[in-house]
Amino acid sequence: MSKKDIASLVDDRPEDGVFRLHRSVFSDPEIFELEMKYIFERNWVFLGLDSQVRNPHDYMTTTVGRHPVVVMRDGEGNLNAFINSCPHKGARLCHLAQGNRKIHVCQYHSWSFDSAGRIRGLKFKDDGQYSPAFDDDSHDLAALPRFEVYRGFMFGALSADVLPLSEYLGEARTFIDIAVDTSPQGLELVPGVVGFTFEGNWKLQLENCSDQYHFTSTHPSYLKVLDRRAEKGWEGTVRANVRGRGGRKAMQFPADGLEHIAGGSTSFEHGHNLNWNRRTVNDSHPLFERAEELKEQFGEARRDWMFNTRNLTLFPNVQVAENASSQLRIIRPISVDKTEMLTYCIAPVGESAAARAQRIRQYEDFFNPSGLATPDDTINYEDCQDGHLNPVAPWLQGHARGMMLASPDGDPFIDRLGVKALSSVIGGVELGDETIFHTYYRSWRALLQAGQRADEAAARGQPAPAPARLVETVR
Image 1 (tube, rainbow, N blue to C red):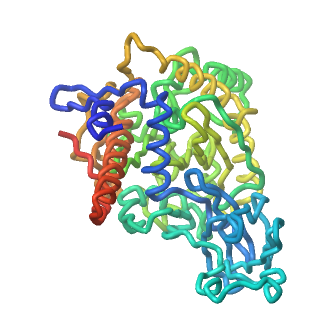
Image 2 (cartoon, rainbow, N blue to C red):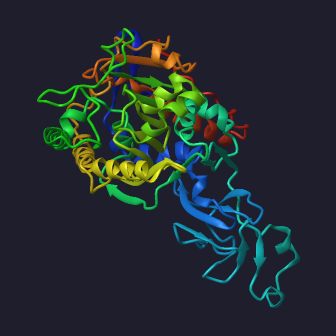
């Protein structure tokens, strides 16, 4: 597929008020292969939280693109990430999702490795009649070329030619900080993980977490449950963060002269974004018991953002959803029309038993295949995947809402944090901004084109271009 072909799939003409995607972005297997090669295997991807490997000799397994990876903490407490493959015959070394082990033994030929990835035993080596050249090679596990941790969020890359992680995350780091700072000890995963698949492209999940337009259409059963609870006077349950009709409780806005603003969306460099709704500091949030403490420590503006609903996406594969409860979502593309999701309830370390119980109950309400929302979303993904095969009308119209409001000048809510965004949109609850998706596909396009240029340079025997800052602008 040529560079021109990639460019032609994103009709991006902001000066004309146009942003459209070709349906094949979601349905073409060749495009999927390019995504795996140039996005997931030549870019930073999220691996997990360092609290998953908290103790010496803890390990966890994951994937980077199509490759199995194991993250280990060695006996000195150092974290490292390796390809989860024995160098002998390539067999997968670690099979469990998590564990604790000082020595890992390959079940195929019993080569053994310590928790720092070093070879510790090579079965019958002295009898193996190896040539001297054999020991010229390292027999240790292959470390990921890049591995870094930011505030407990672990990222890895299969290519060394990536930007420093701090630069890649950029201004989006502020919203990682806001989540982590809800406890002096940071975040942890509530025990238990849910994994499921849906028959749809991975970018459908990427979009949906940022999509506020779908909520009242897709999740009426959830809203009806909230109505019934309100009628019965059940306090302490999760409340809708929308101003609805039919008796739902109106959202309470701070009296700051911007009462008509329900929330907004913010786009950052490198495909990261945030959509949010305003929420007052009230007892429907598990953090309420620490509201004054957080205000004292971080100031009123940052404390208030901890109470706002926030869906943060770090391109390409992780989302931190702070709405009905707090969830970590990890996206793993399997094929062009199949995606695996791993989802965790996340929580501040050390919160009270009452706050933790409230958080878990609210989490159960909304998330996972057993909740009231996730099944609705996954069915929509599969319906969309079928529709993306449409050859008659190839251009999608789902990326246009909000284009008359998008501004590179920030907004009064983001400005309170001192954050510089590429683009911001604020408005009422029914706005349902879709310009937030644009940063995904501008970065998507840039990464695919950069990968193709690098491969073309390599084919000519030239050095690959340096990794570029993928700066998308509102023109």
